[in-house]
Length: 240
Length: 325
Image (tube, rainbow over all chains, first blue to last red; front, side, top):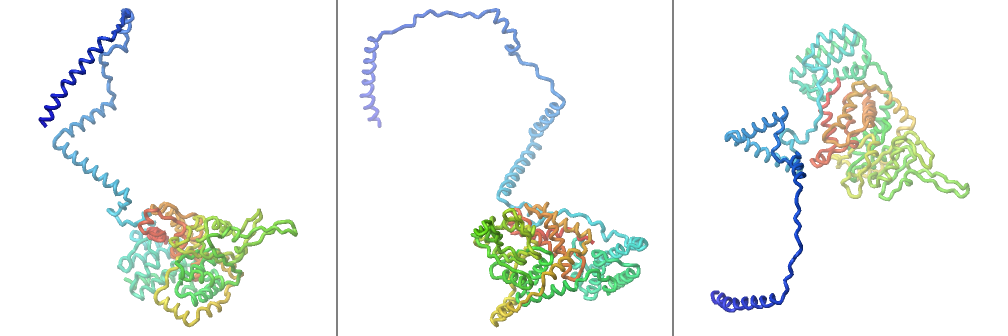
C-alpha cells in the first residue's frame, strides 16, 4: 500500500505541475474584454417612501391580540385544564395508559370487524335474531280474575268471560308449575307440557272450548256459558 | 259435549271427505312425507301454487303427478331445460297462409294442473313467462288476453340451488308460490317400506290404480267454503306482525311482501278446514308461516355464512311474538 502511495506521489505530482504550466501559456494569448457601460444609480423618491411607510400594510409592529369571546375562553380553559392534567405525573400517566388501551381495543375491533367475526358472541348467542318484544296487554299474574269475570258476566259478555276463565286456568297451572307460562307459547304447547294424562285431557277440552268461543267467535248464551264455567271450575278444583 | 254447545255453522263434511280421499290416495304410494301431502292439499284448496324442493330422488315429481291424477282435471307437464323459450311455455302465433292471418297456438301452460319439472333449470327469461299466468291466471300474447280455466295450479319441482346446472329463481316468481316445501329424505323405516313395495312390484300397480277423487266443481265448492271461513281480527293482526317483523329483522335484507300476509291467512284457513274447523287459530298461522315465508325472504350474507336458514329466522320471529289470546 505504502509502495503504491509512493509511486502515485512520485509520478503524479510532477504531471499536475506540468499541466498548470501549459494553461498559463494559453492565457497569455487570450484577450480579456471588460464591461465599460455606465452604471446609472436609481434614487427612491423620499415623499413616496414616507407615504408608504405611513400605510398600515407596511407597519409590521405586532397587532394587538383580539379579545376572546365567551366560547373561545371556555375552550381555552378546557384545553388548559387538559394540559394541566396531562402534565400531572399521576393523572397524566393513567390517561396515557387509558388512551393506549383504547387505541389497542379500537385496532382489535376494526380487525375483527374486517375479518367478519360476529362480535355479539361476547354478549349473547350469535344466531339470535332481534325482535322487539311487546308487553302483553294482559299479564295473567296481575289480573284480578274474580272481579273481571264477574264484570264480564254482569255485562253479558260471555265471550270475554270464557277468555278470562281460560287465562285463570293457565295461571293456576303455572302457579303449580305444571306449565311454564310464556305469552309467546301456543295453547297446544301448554297442553303438551302437562304430564298428567287426566289433566292433559281436561285441559285439551277447555282449550277446545276457549278456541271455539274466542277465535271462532261462536255465540254462547247464559246457559251454555254456565256449562263451560262449571267445566273450568271443576278443572281448577281438581288441579289444586 | 262441544257439538251441543257450538252448533255447526259451516258444513265441512264434503270438504273433509275430499281431503281424506286425496290424502289416502297419496299416502298409499308416497311413503312418509305426510306434511308434504297436507301442504299439497292445502295449496290446492287455498288456490295457490306450490314449489317442491329436494335433492333428486325424493319423490317430488311423483307427488305432484299423483295430486294431478287425483283430480278430474286436465294435466300438462313442462320439463324446464336451459334452452326452453317463453313461447315454448305460453304458445306462439303461427301464420296461416290460407287465411293470411296469425293464429295463436296455445302452449302447455293451458291446463288445470301444470307440473313444471325442474323449474330452476331454465333461465330468468323463461321464468318471467310465468309471472302473469301465476298471479293473474291469464296470458297476454300479441295484445290478446287469454284467461285460464279454474282451477289453475302450478306444481313446480326444483333441486336445491347448490346442485349443478340450477339457477336461482327470481324473487318475483318465488313470491307467486303459496308454499315452498322442502322434501326431506325418508327415514330408514320408510325407505325399507319403499324398497319392499318396489320389490313386490306394488308401486306401479298402485300408481296405475290412482283414480280422480275430486272433480273441478268440488274443488270450486271447497275453495268457496274456505274463503268464507272465520278469522278473528287479532289473528289477522298476528299474521301481519309476523310479516312485518321480516322487514325489520337484522338477519334479513329482503322481507316478505303483503302478498305473503294474504297467503298466510288463506293457507291458514285451508289448514283449519282440513282439521274440521271453520275458524283459524294461532297454530294454523304458525303451521303455515315457514312454508309461506321462507322462500320470500332473503338472509344477509353474513347470516347465510353462519349457517342460518330463512326457516330458522321465521321460527325465531314466531318465538318472540306474543300469541293473541
